[in-house]
Length: 451
Image: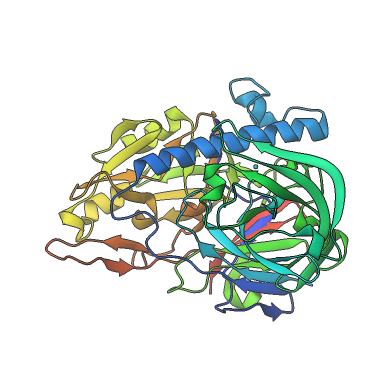
């Protein structure tokens, strides 16, 4: 997690999902609605939690990069870029509803059924890792989470092997490996390998999600095993090896996970496909990052990662971006602040133009709205906000999280709690995003415009 990677889901196009509280079928797959909470950070940023999130992100990549080397016998290019050390390594159709959790490490989760008969778990869908785990009934440190009872599932099989996810930030999960039937939105994967956790560190214990389901490539698996969605592909359960994520305010349209393709009724125009450069993370080429009329970042690579809210890059590139934003200050620990205007009544047009940020993929620029860029005020009443672009440390490689995944097309639609001068209660303004699709069939990630 010490390398800068722009979360770009390989072979996937994030497309808008159907607004629904239950799975919705289409000729190209199933959409599962997810729930989001409007106020994620604001109005005042919790800098301690943000620093913890950045540390966990670094730890996830270190862990999954080690998995890659064990599975392939070779260093991932990012491991070498990261301080030149292999020790730095990371994480028919269906759609599942997702909910944005309070814990910033686990943002989007939905219902997953495990066992026969199935028991529902709230699972975080992570495009930056590849394994599935949930708490066991034997876990004494798993808090109030739903537990997986292997003795009551007719299809559970003990593999007789332990598993352990140990991250450099001291977070950890460990237990035993089983196979069982796992279903999402009615799509069943039989004999799916999963971890039955008997130990959760505090960060996992306090998460609103019971467990994690990785949606990255099999080469990142610690078990090692075939990830859930790849099992659906192998067993012929989905008509296409594609899934789509729509992350947005529920006021715009329901955020959801779409399995088995992308619903053509939800997007317009062609999909902007970008080839995955290495089959591990959803990693694609970055055409540049622009700030107003300047382009401080002209090229690079990026990883699309739903497991973080942040957009992370190397120190010199991040410094160049903030140098183009008026009133920016290096706050240390990888974070910067920038100046807002008018006591939260709005942004001056001149500042808005200078601070407008866009990321380019496949020759097309996608805007990051001011609301998505802000992680919250530095302190109560402050005219300074923490920016979502932070430092991780890898040259020319970025990680792009849900702040970009929730990008908008116009500045009129923003999702953020604004506290105008003289008003006690926040005015909630929403923002929507463009869809993205992840494609295992052709190893690519796609972007499309909402219809």
